[in-house]
Image 1 (tube, rainbow, N blue to C red):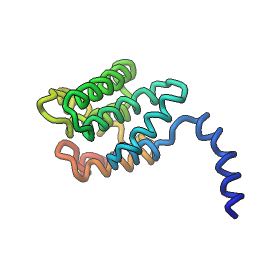
Image 2 (image 1 turned 90 degrees about the horizontal axis):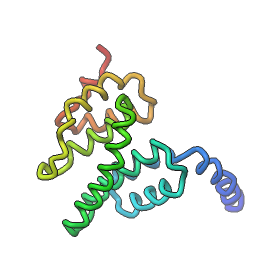
Image 3 (image 1 turned 180 degrees about the horizontal axis):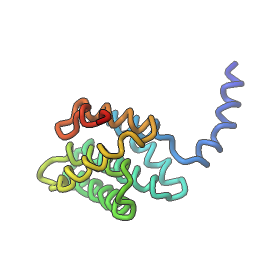
Length: 160
């Protein structure tokens, strides 16, 4: 039995790496806040082809990672690295609702002193307008976020 599982996993690895990172894997790391898991997903993303999605995911994870570090100078450095990646992808893909959702989550949770909260209203509007057209995995995370958010409510996401 164990041999079958190992064999299946070995056969699956090329499929996993060819198709890019799984959204569930990314969002699990992004939402749990486990530093080792975040580092592992960042490493995986860095070893893959650098697509727009991978860059946005890496940026968001670095910004999340910054909140888990202890040294203020290192926190700021990692946060800025992540912000540059995510902001570049948003600038090149302004209507991408997933990127806007990632930025919305980070903005709501970022310390006010960073000043990283200037696009909350715009991002909220994009996420709300695009919600019905998002894939089911992303919708699940948007809804979960809205249940504890101060800027996005579950009622915002219901069909009008």
